[in-house]
Image 1 (tube, rainbow, N blue to C red):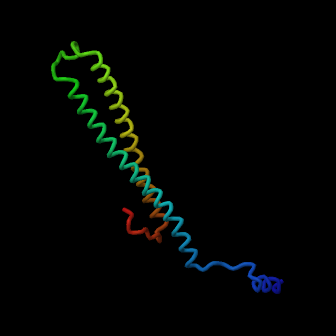
Image 2 (cartoon, rainbow, N blue to C red):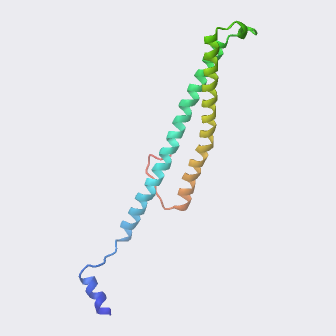
Length: 129
């Protein structure tokens, strides 16, 4: 039986990789996950910043077109009222999405912390936050 193993080794049927190569392979796999988490977090933060800016713009526009007289709604043109309704819908949709993003972002941050705690030997590249 031992002769069979020696022959297998002599014919290169099986050869294990070095521990350095195994470690490098693991680092690449972990880095791919870390990159995905970082990209998701950055995209979420960018979406939140852009959407927040747009919601603020629509709020300002709605305030300007609303007027400041207490009875202005009585004499407002129907087109202006329809525009106010559209602004209201867009504002609500934007604020809903902002709330969703505020819930999602901590989850991505948790995943990042979990990854580093589960793989303490992982050495992230210098461009990660």
